[in-house]
Length: 124
Image 1 (cartoon, rainbow, N blue to C red):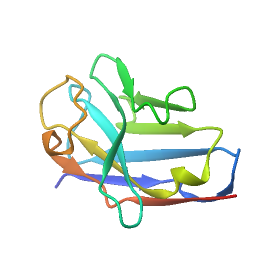
Image 2: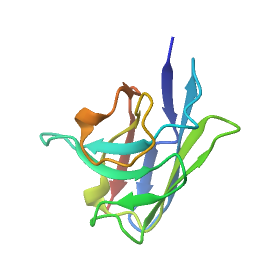
Image 3: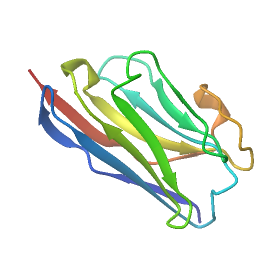
Image 4: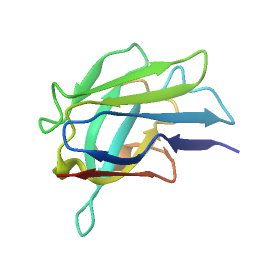
């Protein structure tokens, strides 16, 4: 059974930092692209960042320069380092993985596996 489990969310003041982790189990994702999405209350889920199997990265304009996505294939774990957090970053953050494709995509529907989400609240 494939599972993605996020952790690291919480409450932080504006300007602060958090590091999200996504531990995968049930199969290896070293050959798969993985990504982070978020969903704020009353809004649609939106793309945050993605990383290819080869380590290439892409970011949403809203987080570029503040967030960094990375992966540790030996640990089968995905990370999202979030710096200079803003109140508008408040959302539930989800990690996602493609089944067997290593190329980066921004569309949620292209991802096959999802975690349960971890909430991030940024206070002003």
